[in-house]
Structures are given as C-alpha cells and as structure tokens.
Length: 178
Image (cartoon, rainbow, N blue to C red; front, side, top):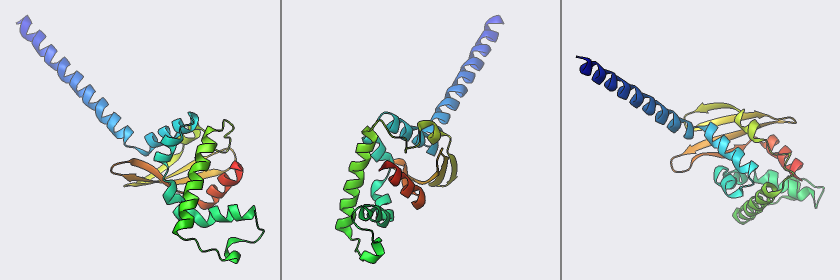
C-alpha cells in the first residue's frame, strides 16, 4: 500500500517537472522570437562593438533605399550650401549602392569608436515601448536628448530586423555622429 503511494507521488512529481520544463522551453522560444530579444542582441552588438551582428539586425540597405535623399542632403551640405532638390541630383541605383557601402563603412567605424554617446544605450534599447502588429513592430525609445522611433519587421529566416528609422530621428543621429 505504501509502495503504491510513493509511485503516485513519483508520477505526480514527474508530471510536475515535465510541465515546468515545457513552460520554460515555451517561454524561452517566445522570448527569442520577440522584438525585445532582437533589441537585447542589438544592445549587445553596440556594447561589444560587433558591427557584423549590428548589420545583421539592421537592414541598412532598406533604410538607405527609403532615406537616400536625407543621406545625400547631409553629405552635400558639407560641399555646397544648396539643398539637394535645387541641385536636381538623380538618385539612381549606382548612387544608392555607393551610399549603402558608405553607410555600412560608417556604421563599422562608429561601433569601433568607444565615444558613441549618440547611440542609445543597451538599457535604453531594452526599455523601448513596443507596439507589435503581426510581423511589424514600432519601437519608441526615450533617450536623454531626443526620442528615437524605429520600425521592425520579422522575416522567416532572419527574425526581427530594424527596417526603418523615423526620418527626423535618423537626421539627429547622423548629425550627432558627425
């Protein structure tokens, strides 16, 4: 009789441990597939000067495609006081490809720079307010100087990636970075 009670206790203990393990595995899976985990990885990349991870998590090509006029305006200001529309510069594929290469090079340089006050801290990245709708998310960070709004998109093979930055926030970041 006592042997049967200990068997039942063992079965209940095994079921309980199994449920706890299943809960932990499920929670871990949901966390690593969340925008918050991507922000954690992005913060790690910034903190550890890991430009390769940063460039995997940030779709520079897409951001440059969307904001190429802003990038060119900031570059042209250094050589001409005239605004880009006045100069009638055609932004074609070769120009965008060159811009993408320049931006990636600048990202690598800035991440190697230990004086990177213009980038949000790892803590600020984790405290961002996330509004998620399906495979899209909008993250707003409250930084010391200016808010920063970024758009995320979840792909099947790469997970969450930064695909857009608010144009004014991007301009502020670029100006602060020099």
